[in-house]
Amino acid sequence: MRADARRNHERLLAEARRAFAEHGTDASLEDVARRAGVGIGTLYRHFPNRHALMNAVFQDALASLLTRSAELASADRPCRALVEWLRALITHAGEYRGVARALMAASHDTGSALSQCSVPLREAGSRLLSRAQAAGAVREDVSISDLLQLTNAIALAAEQAPCDPELADRLLALTLRGLKARAS
Image (cartoon, rainbow, N blue to C red):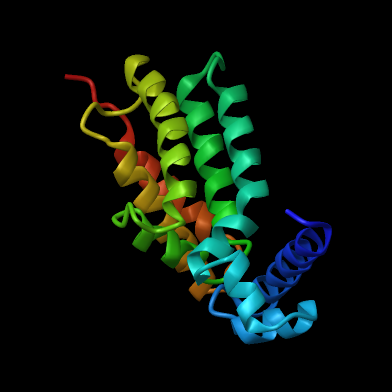
């Protein structure tokens, strides 16, 4: 990338982060471009659609979640490691209004730019889930797809109830009770 194009790219990302934090992921892309000091055509040359821009904005958080998954992969208590990682996912999804909804939709659309986020998360989560299942702490019929949808649903519910900061933790605790393996 040429130096001016790289500067435009970085300004667009910085303004998109601010706009998504202030107004959610439905923030006006025209406003993002204007605040970055470029035209909408420049924004679309760098990011062909909203999901591509969202994917670029979320790469730092994605890297952090993947790093944390790798750290937890050898934890002594696999179920606790899975729960810690799920909490981190919910926290991430709650950083920008609209992320949870977009990630839920992208989970079924492999053509979406956001699938570049969901595929590595699915793989990282699968490893943690498999360890918890092998330890007998999580039911065998639980899938990573279900867990990712549940975490996004919890984040979405919490987003809709900003006056209840404990909602996400309560919903996660309720979900976790349903995941536990039962003695035969």
